[in-house]
Image (tube, rainbow, N blue to C red; front, top):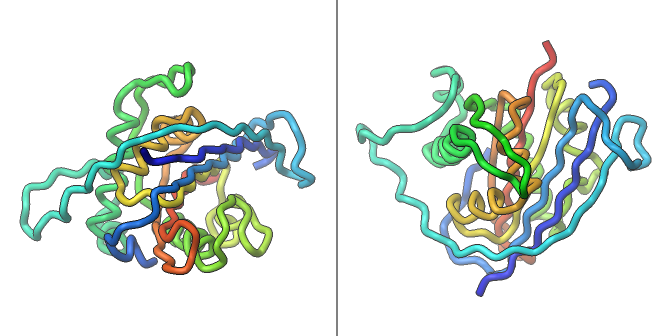
Amino acid sequence: MKRYFLKYIQAGVSAASTRHRNSRQFPEIACICLLSMLLAACGGSSGSDVLSDNQVADTAQAQPTPDPPPPEAGSNTSYNLGNTSQAVIDQCMSEYDKQMLTQVNTARSQPRNCGGEYYPATAALSWHCTLEDVAYAHSRDMGDYNFFSHTGSDGLTVGDRVRNAGYDWSAVGENIAAGQQTIDTVMAAWLDSPGHCANIMRPLYTEFGMASYSADGSDYRIYWTQVFARPRL
């Protein structure tokens, strides 16, 4: 039986790539975590002038299922990429990225309960290359420095990372995971966790990027990061 350690942080603000490297086997311990930063502040304090957060810990179990093989060129595979432009697809999306975005958008296309909180079906997300770059940098940071946290080795959070990359956001969120071997497995774990499920279903977000990173010498050997955002208009 595989063990999954889940924790999530929800945060609010008052204003405001290498893809999956390989498919080798990984340890049975896996972690998932999330951070969301929204326009409406929530209770608590992080010691930051813009962040406030609460933390909840829980445990869950999930059974992995293998990913489908990447589609061959010219196949009739259907993706749900939202309003992602062809220019963005050509610039930075791999088949692997398309599979992840399709799973996220498929989840958003159906109403669901996330830990007892009802979320209606909502609009599909579009891929954003900058958010993918931010996701990859954080997955690599966790793998190279062998830690698991929303706070990077430089002390920055997802809001800092996205802003420093040049994306002016009005809302931003992050799901992270470690140890899951496939897109199917990590998505199942996130959707089974109320806070992570809420991030995936949140209608406020409009854009998305994701990346995983494999690090042989780390505790979990594969690290996943999803970044959700809405630009400031």
